[in-house]
Structure formats: structure tokens, C-alpha cells
Length: 151
Image 1 (cartoon, rainbow, N blue to C red):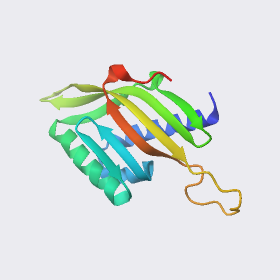
Image 2: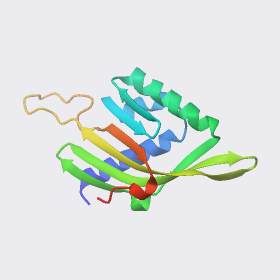
Image 3: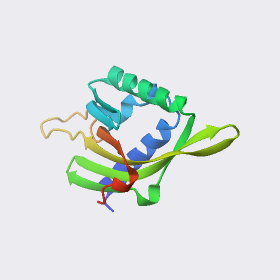
Image 4: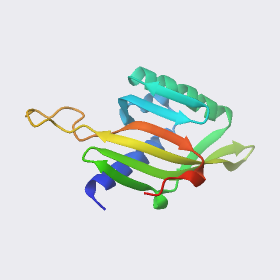
């Protein structure tokens, strides 16, 4: 497995863990400013950090209303593929859990397909920029788990 594949998978796993905190203010650093999130009831374009946080505030509030506690990403079956030098796709599945009384039960199973972009320094630039080499989400699609893309 290439270092870039490892890096993009690690970034997605980190994002998934941070998502479980249900803190919308933690989401903007994971997203490219100019990204989209697609779920069954929602297509959201997000141009900047304020919009990213706003979309996740709504999304996370809807999960809280369902007594969401956390998601468990199927890391062993998580797949990633490089599409170009600075573009990659990640596909997999997760189980979301909810709290019912004193027990935790499955809320739903989901499939995920996310594309990532990494800013690459321009050959004419000698000073590294803050986002050079950082993988960021440009699109996220939540879908039926049985439709996960085999990469």
C-alpha cells in the first residue's frame, strides 16, 4: 500500500473518530473550502468554514434527536484508491449506534464514499503554504451500505 493511500485512509479514520464527538466546530479542518456533503435527505454545498460548521450543526442535531451515540467504521474493509497525484477516493461502511434506556443498539448501517484532494505546492513556490500536502474532503456521500464501491 502506498504512503499516500495510507495517509488518506488515516485522515478519513481520524475524521470518523472526531465526528463521533458531535462537535460541528471540529469539522471545518477536515473539509476543503468548496466541498459537498450528500445524504438521502440532504445535498449541501459548503464554500467556507462557517458553512461547513452550519451544515454539520444541522446534521449532528438530527443524529442527537435519534439518540446517536457513535459510529463504528469498518476499518478492515475500508478501501482507498488514488485517482491522480492529489486526488483519492475512500469507500467503506459503518454502523451507527443509539442509546435506548440503558442499552446501546444499532441505529443504522451506512455506506460511505468520500473524495479527498491534497494541495500540492506549485513548482514556482519556494515557501510551503499551510495546506500543502494536507488531505481534505471535497465530497462525502452517505449511502446504502450494500452499495459500497469496491476499489
